[in-house]
Length: 331
Image 1 (cartoon, one colour):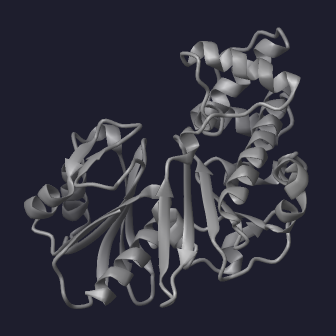
Image 2 (cartoon, one colour):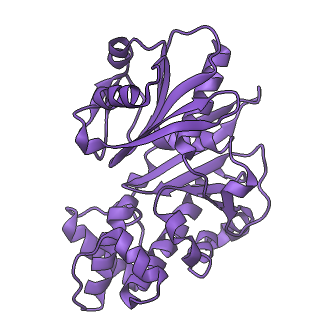
Image 3 (cartoon, one colour):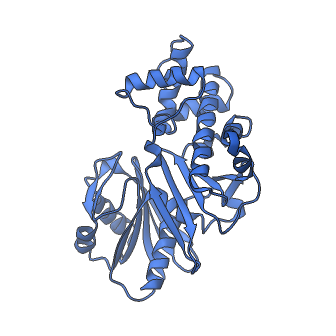
């Protein structure tokens, strides 16, 4: 995360944004009540760079850009930001100076998603198995959208939360049965020999997975958009789409369980992103939880860890606002 802040006093409002590979979502947030308003979505492809999109938001919504915090789908550990799944790149310091911002914070999108866990209430998550979360323990968050994001959250002794960003979505995908090895071979041929988890646990991944399973069954299948695959699976009108979604959830369960073991996330594993909440009615009957818990000698640990699907809107913007609030408090 990058913090380029000069402000020394608290502010009631900030402009926040969640920048993905497809869309940039902007809003204004009250840092006392966490109420969001003036939300507007801009297609990233319509703007040459982030600065142009921010200026468009300022002009169309008639808001001041004073304190700005953004979550963005790429590493955010230095002044130079380069998006992974889009062409935008910028300097944090240069952007702050060009727009005359008093504070400008840039977080990896899943560091922001991790921070959002502090702001969620019980009505904004759906529990998927496991025991009770331990509030003081580490938490993990992952989410399938344009890519596969991963992050963690730990609590500090002073009560603040600290996000741990990462690029776990680019870790190798590990098939565990004959069909999955066939899927792996199909994808390896398509992606130069290496298959990351993101290659199937994402919106584009769902589309590739559909083709891979059709190939496994020696069945012709035209290219299909992820939204269509999901809709056909939900309506139970396409056996191949249903199998694809079931395989998606099985592999997601294995990946989420691995993530839980990595940092012993007894605080829970949270699933964000645009894909899973839309397919939530199919999740309970899938192999997600079985595969999550299938961890050999550590199955008892995995069984105890709860999973939650985040159903709250604009969680990323709330998360980056929470981080900004903590930063301003320290200043």
